[in-house]
Image (cartoon, rainbow over all chains, first blue to last red; front, side, top):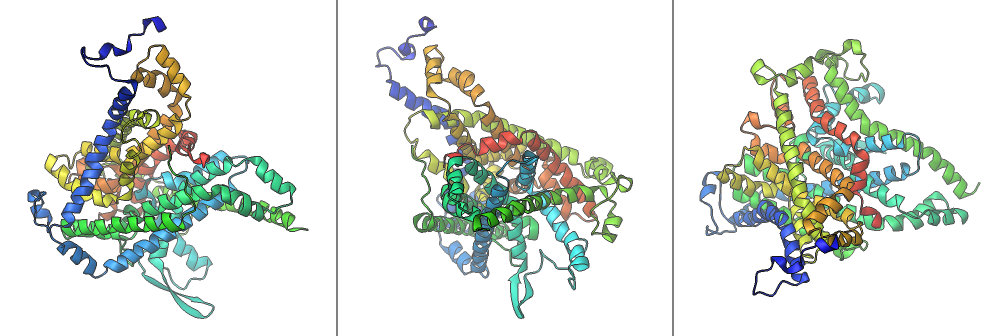
Length: 329
Length: 288
């Protein structure tokens, strides 16, 4: 076979030095990656830059066709957004929602991964069914939750009233505050927001479960066996052997889930439409865009959201995260 | 009894409680969805708490209403299913065509800007899709792509490319370089090597990837809502279902039948290929 190989420089134009191996590799690399780069540039990077420009121009849907690079730049949108009623509370809601959903989904994912770690009959089936909430379409699962929690014909309320002795049905998705009496004290809890967080935890714990289980299965058996011989209790083994091994994956999951949840739109939109104290910023952006047709203000708002996320990530990676193993190659 | 024995016993029991709890919590909503779609609506309203109905009570009227074309008074979900299938299959195939060479380049080839590429990919997920939606809405309107399934497909490709490349890269990096060198000695060009050596070896990762992209495209809602909402003929199943819920005189059981129609294809596909997906998606995670 070697004999049939063409000479390496056959394709090079005569009179020019044939490109070195390194140069050819460079070209091939860029060529292979170029379709990806073009798609990402056109559909992601350019739109982001454009949003930045739109955020500083007074543009509504009617005059967007005339908008260009050389428009009138102004800070009016930012001012409008930052001073508009409800913006800061919406940012706070986003933060509570994100932190709550991130922590709970990773926590449940960890418990599920630990429980499903060892082999048992039917494990493959159980593992697959645990992944279902993550795999199923968001529109379908939000509808089932809505129906399950409905005050009129929901299963949760029917059973709550019948078996748990609730006085009246609870409107899980449309009630802003719910008063709980705890040890005699009356506490107001943001009911709809908690329900939405619970939904996120339910829908995304499989994601954490998947990564944590994969990591758990790679922990060398000898480590745990040695701990067992030393008489370590399961909680001690977990604390001193498994947890350090899981640390990097948990840190990575925290970042991933935080980013994804912070930017989440469809779950909240479909469950509550942003009502009852669940108005996260992305839903607000959507409202500005579709109800007020105010593209400038919507862009400014989205920009503030993205900047807030970057700031939080920097703080997290800089001060809070256990060392994440970088992508170092 | 010492602490280790006590804990081992407690967790031994607790583990089964948790497994049972997990199965109920994850499966029950889907079971309820299916059950409700089969029960007559007036019966559901009278007895919302029942979680069992025998085949004698079942009705397929809900499915008939959902699937019948609009011209004959139904909701026309068959049309939506076809749209979803077109968009998802196209997005899957095109994403793979673009990401396989890309993943190969990122894994194997040294080129200018190789390190920086990851930052570009991060941008896809760092910014909320609602932020991309505004300029894309304007851009696609100008290009006449808004309201076309093709425009939506392009967006899905961009949304899934980074994860796709990352997944493939994790797998490709486990294939020994010596195989490629052998292929080169045999006179294969680089593209031939990818097609005849790398792709067959990476088949599991490619399949898992295909499944992932298909799932994202099939389930997506926001861009479908923004781009396609004006023309009913273009709706995907997710969008059709969401619009159905806003409609008047649509009973909850019909809504559940639509949910089943939307969920069933993806769940069937998932169970058929579950092992592939779990292994392909987390191929790199066990490295720490």
